[in-house]
Length: 152
Image (cartoon, rainbow, N blue to C red):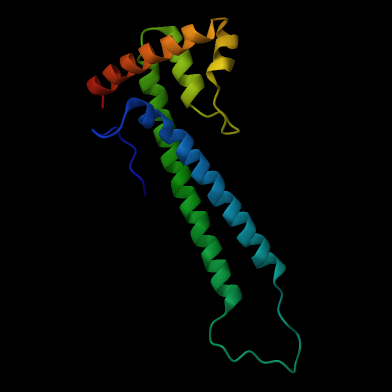
């Protein structure tokens, strides 16, 4: 399982983007699971008495095992996502400027649908000029880096 910590080779922005990356990976695994479940449920047992399967491998059983493995993997990924999301939100909340909190939260913490806001959306929501929001974002990243350095 991927470890989610800020390391020397990672920027603060990359650290914050981990939530979106993991959210995307989880959604792709869920799609893979749904496809596999559809295949497993779509297969039936052959009742044709003239055909006898001589292969010792049971394809249906292997598919079910693979499906269950993917479901366990999804559960682990969701657990890691929830833990990391909570950690990042708490770190964002350590910032003293409410504008920084709002910008970093809106930009990097996915909502229930996995979406984050663009700088354009944030500028409209905050009733600020787009350029000003971009400047504040840069300042927020610097302040966030300090939070992480003081509280890893």
